[in-house]
Amino acid sequence: MRCDECAYFEYDEDEEEYFCSVNMDEDDYYRLLQSSYKECPYYRNGDEYAVVRHQI
Image (cartoon, rainbow, N blue to C red):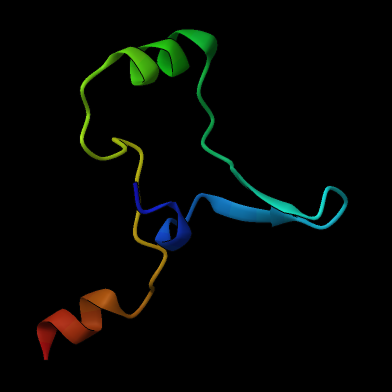
């Protein structure tokens, strides 16, 4: 999965590590682990300029 590029992949200064900040409950997390997703269904491109580059 491309977590490094995801808008939900945030750095926690207290823990000094990255984490996924998607707001999901236990059922959503279980479905994500049990599914056959090839990519994360919550992925959102963190690159704000991707749309602009696409239009050029």
